[in-house]
Length: 120
Length: 78
Image 1: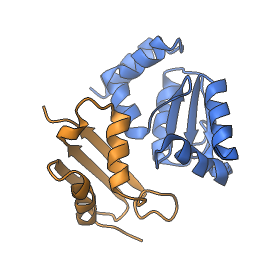
Image 2 (image 1 turned 120 degrees about the horizontal axis):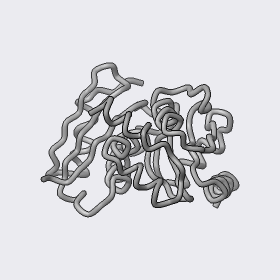
Image 3 (image 1 turned 90 degrees about the vertical axis):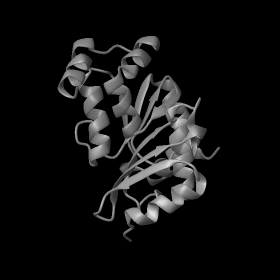
């Protein structure tokens, strides 16, 4: 592993929920990153955000680590869950709730239901 | 460097010859593709979409990639 992929591995194992994104959760700089960060924020999930635009080595390292070419990338308990399309699908199907519940990640169930009502 | 929806389908088709494929988008950078293929059966979404990205051979990659945004939907036939 390169230094960057080692750093990615350390980050995703040390934190329950990590979102590698363009920009920060307060100020996303890409619509796709914004959508995933927005879902997590709305659901009240505590997560670490890593801004790949701030570090070119991490930007490449995260793609090598997951064998996935796009940002954002969501990790739960060290496992790669998916990018924007997958997280969107999982949010609307309720699979994301199940994933968080199974992994002991706290989230606001009412908020998750509201997202589905609004997009039903 | 722009790319057309009509450029994307053959790349996916080469890897999934029997798939049902639709690609939409006409601004040269943002596309939505749906790929329905028997080979996806039993695979999770990450595995399915990784296979489609592999077919696009680096076109998604970073600032030099022609494809900035491809919204992917993948599934096995019903």
